[in-house]
Image 1 (cartoon, rainbow, N blue to C red):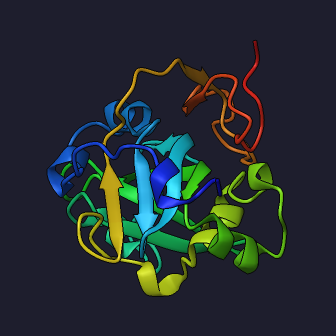
Image 2 (cartoon, rainbow, N blue to C red):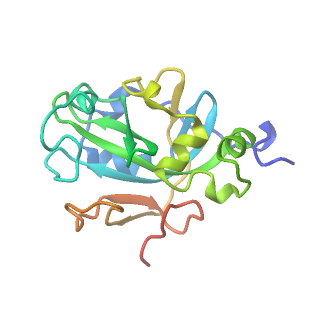
Length: 200
Protein backbone atom coordinates (compact mmCIF):
# COMPACT_ATOMS: atom_id res chain seq x y z
CA UNK A 1 0.00 0.00 0.00
CA UNK A 2 1.32 3.47 -0.81
CA UNK A 3 2.80 5.27 2.24
CA UNK A 4 0.42 8.20 1.88
CA UNK A 5 -2.75 6.33 0.89
CA UNK A 6 -5.82 7.33 2.87
CA UNK A 7 -5.99 3.94 4.55
CA UNK A 8 -2.53 4.38 6.07
CA UNK A 9 -2.72 8.02 7.16
CA UNK A 10 -2.10 8.57 10.89
CA UNK A 11 -4.96 9.71 13.08
CA UNK A 12 -5.08 13.49 13.49
CA UNK A 13 -5.33 15.06 16.92
CA UNK A 14 -7.51 17.99 17.88
CA UNK A 15 -6.98 21.17 15.83
CA UNK A 16 -4.57 23.66 17.38
CA UNK A 17 -6.14 27.11 17.63
CA UNK A 18 -4.34 30.44 17.73
CA UNK A 19 -4.78 30.54 21.52
CA UNK A 20 -2.36 27.58 21.74
CA UNK A 21 0.44 29.93 20.70
CA UNK A 22 -0.35 32.66 23.23
CA UNK A 23 2.11 31.22 25.77
CA UNK A 24 5.85 31.20 26.37
CA UNK A 25 7.70 30.16 23.24
CA UNK A 26 9.54 27.65 25.46
CA UNK A 27 6.26 25.93 26.32
CA UNK A 28 4.91 25.95 22.78
CA UNK A 29 8.05 24.70 21.01
CA UNK A 30 8.35 21.26 22.70
CA UNK A 31 4.57 20.76 22.53
CA UNK A 32 4.70 21.18 18.75
CA UNK A 33 6.86 18.07 18.49
CA UNK A 34 4.58 15.30 17.24
CA UNK A 35 1.91 17.72 16.01
CA UNK A 36 0.82 17.48 12.38
CA UNK A 37 1.27 20.44 10.04
CA UNK A 38 -0.64 20.58 6.76
CA UNK A 39 -0.71 23.19 4.00
CA UNK A 40 -3.51 22.57 1.51
CA UNK A 41 -3.61 19.01 2.88
CA UNK A 42 0.12 18.38 2.28
CA UNK A 43 2.48 17.85 5.20
CA UNK A 44 3.39 15.64 8.10
CA UNK A 45 4.44 15.27 11.71
CA UNK A 46 6.65 18.00 13.16
CA UNK A 47 9.83 16.30 14.38
CA UNK A 48 12.15 19.28 14.92
CA UNK A 49 11.76 22.94 15.87
CA UNK A 50 13.76 25.82 17.32
CA UNK A 51 12.55 28.51 19.73
CA UNK A 52 13.48 32.18 19.29
CA UNK A 53 12.70 34.67 22.05
CA UNK A 54 12.73 38.44 21.56
CA UNK A 55 15.54 38.77 24.13
CA UNK A 56 17.64 36.36 22.06
CA UNK A 57 20.28 37.99 19.81
CA UNK A 58 19.64 35.29 17.19
CA UNK A 59 15.95 36.26 16.87
CA UNK A 60 14.95 38.38 13.88
CA UNK A 61 12.98 40.59 16.27
CA UNK A 62 15.92 41.35 18.57
CA UNK A 63 16.61 44.80 17.09
CA UNK A 64 12.97 45.82 16.80
CA UNK A 65 10.29 45.77 14.11
CA UNK A 66 11.08 45.99 10.40
CA UNK A 67 8.88 45.53 7.33
CA UNK A 68 10.10 41.92 7.13
CA UNK A 69 9.51 40.86 10.74
CA UNK A 70 6.42 42.97 11.52
CA UNK A 71 4.17 39.94 11.93
CA UNK A 72 6.33 38.75 14.85
CA UNK A 73 5.21 41.80 16.85
CA UNK A 74 1.53 41.08 16.25
CA UNK A 75 -0.78 38.61 17.99
CA UNK A 76 0.20 34.93 18.36
CA UNK A 77 -0.89 32.17 16.03
CA UNK A 78 0.28 33.59 12.72
CA UNK A 79 2.91 32.50 10.21
CA UNK A 80 6.17 34.39 9.78
CA UNK A 81 7.81 33.40 6.49
CA UNK A 82 11.18 34.76 5.42
CA UNK A 83 13.87 34.05 2.85
CA UNK A 84 17.01 32.44 4.25
CA UNK A 85 20.32 33.26 2.56
CA UNK A 86 18.35 34.51 -0.41
CA UNK A 87 17.52 30.93 -1.38
CA UNK A 88 15.05 29.10 0.86
CA UNK A 89 11.80 30.09 2.53
CA UNK A 90 11.49 29.31 6.25
CA UNK A 91 8.28 29.24 8.28
CA UNK A 92 7.91 30.27 11.92
CA UNK A 93 4.91 30.27 14.25
CA UNK A 94 4.47 33.52 16.18
CA UNK A 95 4.06 32.96 19.94
CA UNK A 96 3.42 34.86 23.18
CA UNK A 97 1.37 38.00 23.67
CA UNK A 98 1.20 40.75 21.06
CA UNK A 99 4.43 42.76 21.10
CA UNK A 100 6.59 39.93 22.44
CA UNK A 101 7.90 39.06 18.96
CA UNK A 102 8.87 35.48 19.78
CA UNK A 103 8.48 32.55 17.38
CA UNK A 104 9.15 28.88 16.69
CA UNK A 105 11.04 27.89 13.54
CA UNK A 106 9.77 24.65 12.01
CA UNK A 107 12.89 22.69 11.07
CA UNK A 108 11.76 19.22 9.97
CA UNK A 109 8.72 17.05 9.31
CA UNK A 110 8.05 13.35 8.92
CA UNK A 111 6.01 13.29 5.68
CA UNK A 112 2.59 11.67 6.02
CA UNK A 113 0.17 13.50 3.71
CA UNK A 114 0.70 14.09 -0.01
CA UNK A 115 4.07 12.39 -0.30
CA UNK A 116 3.78 12.07 -4.09
CA UNK A 117 3.27 15.84 -4.35
CA UNK A 118 6.26 16.47 -2.08
CA UNK A 119 8.45 14.22 -4.21
CA UNK A 120 7.42 16.08 -7.34
CA UNK A 121 8.12 19.47 -5.78
CA UNK A 122 11.47 18.41 -4.34
CA UNK A 123 12.55 16.32 -7.37
CA UNK A 124 13.64 13.40 -5.21
CA UNK A 125 12.29 10.10 -3.95
CA UNK A 126 13.92 9.58 -0.53
CA UNK A 127 11.09 10.19 1.94
CA UNK A 128 13.59 10.87 4.74
CA UNK A 129 15.09 13.81 2.82
CA UNK A 130 11.86 15.46 1.69
CA UNK A 131 11.38 17.66 4.78
CA UNK A 132 14.64 17.24 6.73
CA UNK A 133 15.40 20.96 7.00
CA UNK A 134 13.52 24.27 7.16
CA UNK A 135 14.05 25.11 3.49
CA UNK A 136 13.30 21.58 2.35
CA UNK A 137 9.96 21.38 4.13
CA UNK A 138 8.74 24.71 2.78
CA UNK A 139 9.55 23.59 -0.76
CA UNK A 140 7.82 20.26 -0.16
CA UNK A 141 4.71 21.95 1.25
CA UNK A 142 4.65 24.74 -1.33
CA UNK A 143 5.20 27.48 1.28
CA UNK A 144 6.26 30.90 -0.05
CA UNK A 145 6.10 34.54 1.04
CA UNK A 146 2.40 34.34 0.12
CA UNK A 147 1.90 32.43 3.39
CA UNK A 148 3.49 35.17 5.51
CA UNK A 149 1.03 36.66 8.06
CA UNK A 150 -1.56 33.90 7.50
CA UNK A 151 -3.39 32.52 10.56
CA UNK A 152 -2.25 29.07 11.64
CA UNK A 153 -5.77 27.77 12.28
CA UNK A 154 -7.45 28.57 8.98
CA UNK A 155 -7.02 27.20 5.45
CA UNK A 156 -4.66 26.70 3.77
CA UNK A 157 -2.81 25.94 7.04
CA UNK A 158 -4.00 23.31 9.52
CA UNK A 159 -2.27 22.14 12.69
CA UNK A 160 -3.30 19.15 14.80
CA UNK A 161 -2.07 18.19 18.27
CA UNK A 162 0.05 15.10 18.70
CA UNK A 163 -1.79 11.90 19.49
CA UNK A 164 0.95 9.89 21.20
CA UNK A 165 3.71 10.38 23.74
CA UNK A 166 7.16 10.99 22.31
CA UNK A 167 10.64 11.39 23.77
CA UNK A 168 11.47 15.03 23.10
CA UNK A 169 15.19 15.73 22.86
CA UNK A 170 16.79 19.15 23.36
CA UNK A 171 19.99 20.62 22.01
CA UNK A 172 21.66 23.75 20.71
CA UNK A 173 20.28 25.46 17.64
CA UNK A 174 21.76 25.03 14.17
CA UNK A 175 23.24 27.48 11.66
CA UNK A 176 23.39 30.57 13.87
CA UNK A 177 26.31 32.64 15.11
CA UNK A 178 24.72 34.34 18.15
CA UNK A 179 23.46 32.75 21.37
CA UNK A 180 24.76 29.44 20.07
CA UNK A 181 24.90 27.90 23.55
CA UNK A 182 21.15 28.05 24.22
CA UNK A 183 19.50 24.58 24.20
CA UNK A 184 16.41 25.75 22.34
CA UNK A 185 16.21 23.10 19.62
CA UNK A 186 13.60 20.39 20.23
CA UNK A 187 12.91 17.18 18.36
CA UNK A 188 11.92 13.54 18.36
CA UNK A 189 14.89 11.61 19.69
CA UNK A 190 16.02 9.00 17.18
CA UNK A 191 13.81 10.21 14.34
CA UNK A 192 15.14 9.46 10.85
CA UNK A 193 13.56 12.68 9.56
CA UNK A 194 15.63 15.25 11.53
CA UNK A 195 17.83 17.83 9.85
CA UNK A 196 20.60 16.74 12.25
CA UNK A 197 20.60 14.09 15.01
CA UNK A 198 20.57 15.16 18.64
CA UNK A 199 23.54 14.21 20.82
CA UNK A 200 23.02 10.95 22.68
